[in-house]
Image (cartoon, rainbow, N blue to C red; front, side, top):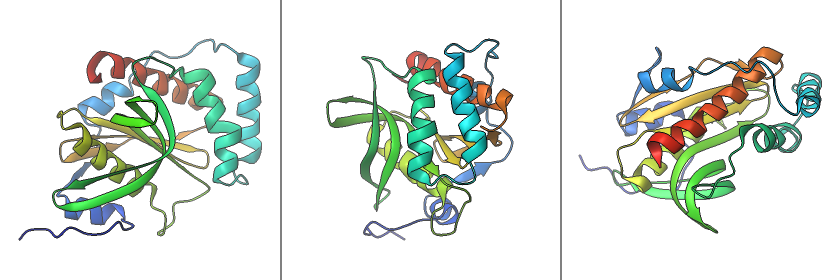
Length: 216
């Protein structure tokens, strides 16, 4: 039966998986395993800034709202330590993206996107990121938010390449990948544990390598 075109709506993960015949793998798929295989950071540059961010996260993870989490932690962490400045892609924030996927209209606002673009014109999304405060709620499913953005990106790109993503719930960071009809999500990395915060930075940096060598 043909799926009807629908207006923009709020999805949960199970609804997206059912509507688009997606399969979630709980053992790491090869591309996610590759992404999460990184060179450990032995000595972080800008250590004083890193220590400030780390300490503020430890003290405020349970209290910050979404805007405070982004302003005081996620934004500085990505800007200073992930090094996503490049002439080949642009980092966009709070951008609405939409596409009709298998006759179903999808539209969402991504908190952060790494994409090929020119000025305000976003063309080829590579990485979709969402952040949330304290816990996952039924009314705001972070997996669904990222997955919807990834499905839109997949439709926009039409190149058969995987879409990468991440979401943050308070102190916990999760990394995910969508390839065709299959998706997979990492274990939680806790930003309030110093060694795991260094791993988060290493994973973000590893994505840049993947982006520049296989996606662009």
